[in-house]
Each structure stands twice: as C-alpha cells, then as structure tokens.
Image (tube, rainbow, N blue to C red; front, side, top):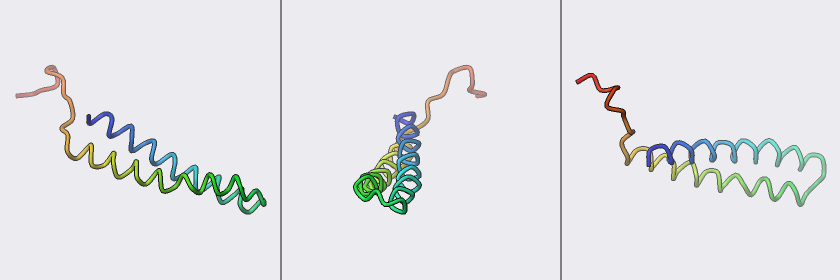
Length: 70
C-alpha cells in the first residue's frame, strides 16, 4: 500500500504541474475549451496528492529481510 501511495503522489504532482502549465498556456493562446479541460485536472491532482499522502502515512514501507540490521 505504501508503494501505491507513492505512485499516487507522483501522478498527482504530474497532473497539477501539467494542468497549470498546459492549462494556462492554452488559455493565453486563446484555446478556451482545451484550457478548461487542463485547468480542471488541477483539483483531481490535489485529490490524488491527498490520497497518496494519507496512504503512505497510514502504511509502513515494505522491507526485505536482507536489509534489516537487527
């Protein structure tokens, strides 16, 4: 579950960054419909960031028996 949370965080970061960059650049170029779509991805990215953060905090990372020093 920890790995899924980390992947979800990365997807959320990509959606927020891509939505901001692509959304505002298409808005300034005059493509209003495409800009609405990409700017609409930003809240989805925040939700995925929140879900990924919660998943990583509530689960313990998996460790190999070789890595344990105890």
